[in-house]
Image (cartoon, rainbow, N blue to C red; front, side, top):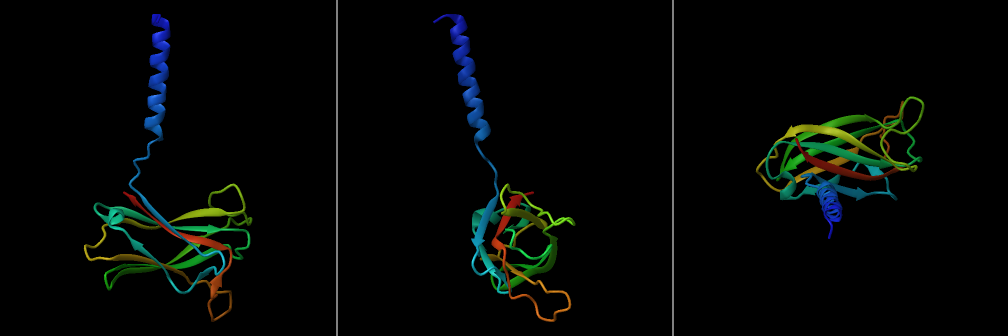
Length: 166
C-alpha cells in the first residue's frame, strides 16, 4: 500500500474509534418509570424501590420525572414526595411545579403532544444505610375553591424518578 492510502486508512480507523468512544455512556444515573396512562396520577403513592447500585455511595441529586399530554387540565402540579429507609420516613415534601407557560404552551421536552418534565427534588442526598430505600410520589392537586382534592390527574401518562451523581 502506498503511504497516502495507509494514512487514509489510519485516519478512518481513528475516526471510527473516536466515534465509538464518544457513543459510550458512562453515566452513573438511575431512572425508573411507572406508566399510569389509564388511571392518571392519584393520591395513593407510586412506590419506587431503589436498587443498591442507584444509592451505593456519594452524594446524589434526585429528580421527579413527569410525562403529560394535552389532556392534562392544569398549568401546574402539586406533588407529595417522600424518602423512606426501612420503616422510617426520612423526609417528605409537598412540591409545586409549573407544567405550562403563561401563554398555555407546555413546558418540558418532546416533539409530539407528549412532554417530559424533569423536576428537581433533592440535591446532595446521601442515602441512609438502612434498607430497603423507597421513594413515594403522589399528587395533591385541588380545584380553586374546592375542599376536596382531585382524586386522579388525567393527562399524566407516567411518573419516574432519576438519581444522578452530584
